[in-house]
Length: 449
Image (cartoon, rainbow, N blue to C red; front, side, top):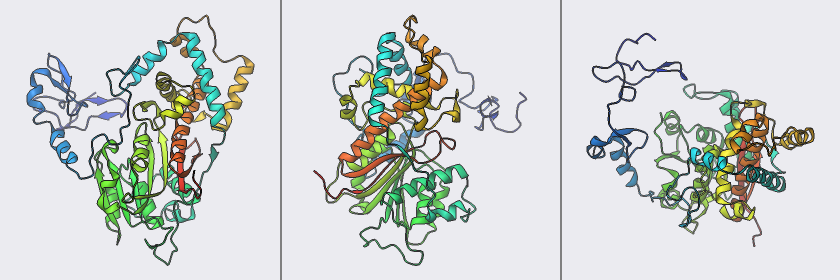
């Protein structure tokens, strides 16, 4: 590959089909990330493990790591409370994870491959039995609310990026909130009043990214207070658009959801709000639910409803999972939960893509495979790794989808325990996104035990 002119790094990125965009270092054709490393032991930076440092330079590096100043500023925020939404983990650990706060995908795979073949088959059977008992009522709810027509018809600020698949997803999320009664469309000629008992003047978007879901909500439903929660730094195009709206208060909270004490956000105290999140990866869904519902009192923000599109279940962790009681009650152990989370990656792998049917088709096709003798249950295979390799891609996909739905069902049941009417729906066709499960919850139930 010919070297590029200018000061940019010449390292070629095959997946992106372009050269690295970073500035190259002096006397080199490459940036610091892609220059040949010096001999010596490289260690992850304790402040920011995304980069490594020579052991001999570690002591001086931690004093000037670019992330250090940022971390000090973030931890000084009034709503910062370290680990408040992290969940609990038993002191007595078994098998894997005894000295780790995060169980990695590699550790989960080792756990599965370390099973006997018969134990693996027993676990698959248990998953199928649990799924059949709790996941039969996930309905399709692909909505295009009239309130969002200005987005569907592209009658929006031209500076805002428009990708139809994302607009359809955002519209359906808001439509499901409206359908369950957690969101009220304002009359076109009358402002929604905060004194209106049914009004929801505020929105908290978890994992907000650039904030386009909230942008649509503000454009179409007249919310007056916007709180965007995101730990990463993004180009804030939606923020700039939102700040141009009259009488709209915008607060972007640069913080990990794990450390957010929502009760300490002064301007949100006692205010009715909805919580939203589009594709909250892995444990971020559990952290968000705990953030909204675990510590409620008279001064707490008033949660009127939530809509969270879940994804990346392979990243879920036992420590942070919101409903361990439900998992244990299903006869699933902690290590089996880790196995379930690892299986979920099969649901959206590259072997089958969008050809996987919706949930309504999973059991039908899986049953047909059983009748035809296609399922791999050959006890002559000597290891689980061999069994997995012999499984057909669609068979792995069915198992992965079932595991995802079991995990989400536990979340839905936990929300119900906290006095909200909740359900799981398929909010968008799988052809638009295979990650199409929405946890939606509405107003307080009128009669509670």
